[in-house]
Image (cartoon, rainbow, N blue to C red):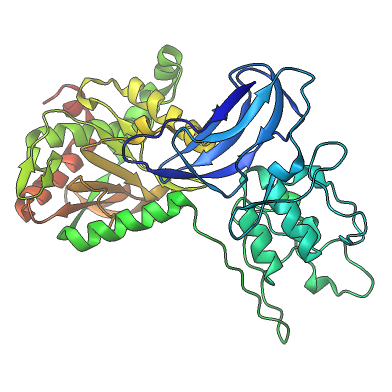
Length: 434
């Protein structure tokens, strides 16, 4: 018999939430297989099996708060019987152990419970969800699922039991089409969307708890607004020279490095050169001191299903364009699959965010504390500009620098952004370090 424990959290993380069990008591497991997922205020951690065997018991249910190295369950050798179900389910309000064991060793509910006309696979639900479903007479197929891979979490079940929104089943003859939801729970998005009110009909609402990551994002952004004296300066860049460079060398670049040359690597390189020229933009405030960093660790804002994350490129002054592109692509893939680690997102002296990928024309990005500045990229739009006394059409991008006016003066911020502009409009200077 071996224990399954919560991974060791970093010093800045005190607790997490058990998101999902991928196995249930009695299931066979293999070494290295993902058994559960735990969400902290920074990342989602995977709990993997350390040996082959059978999951014999679980000590924590989905939605429970867990601490570093706390017991999650146990694994036994093949053929081991799972623990009685009384140890597998918890009261939705307090997490206290409740329930009775069935002959098969898994938590069950009375056969007389009416869960609707649709067939339901109870074994796919966590013990806590099964209990709420049984007590409330809910049909799991009609509960909006916000968990990973469309799983129903304990919070989803509690919301539904309290009268929250439910996805409707197949349309019956007595129901108008306008009252039918667009998809069953199995096809619901990761973040449940509120239904659209029908004129003259009910005005539905749904209360969905914030994830730990979303709570942390909210706290950090509000803290920096309350602490830093944030100001934003703008400029515009004629992207034609950078676009011509990409077009001319793209095929050769891909053939040699196995990755495409994108705009982000050019911006990272331009920002790094500008940080060298204006070191206070790369600095941070600690109490009444200014910390000047002698290295360049640039955070790249990446949108994920769980919110905005900012993985860090280390020592960008020593990275090639190809190295930058490969690392950014790796971060994007890890963010999409929820594989980013705490180490990936720790530290950073400056950040870049690209709202242009979503169509943004202009914005005032928020500083990622304890950093003192962030560069915002935006959409590239062809528009008329004056060039050499003539009006020409050029691909233009607005860029923005939000900075902490406590330590960065307007002169330095404007000059920093102007240098980024000049390097992108003459990329040969940047590559030749001129």
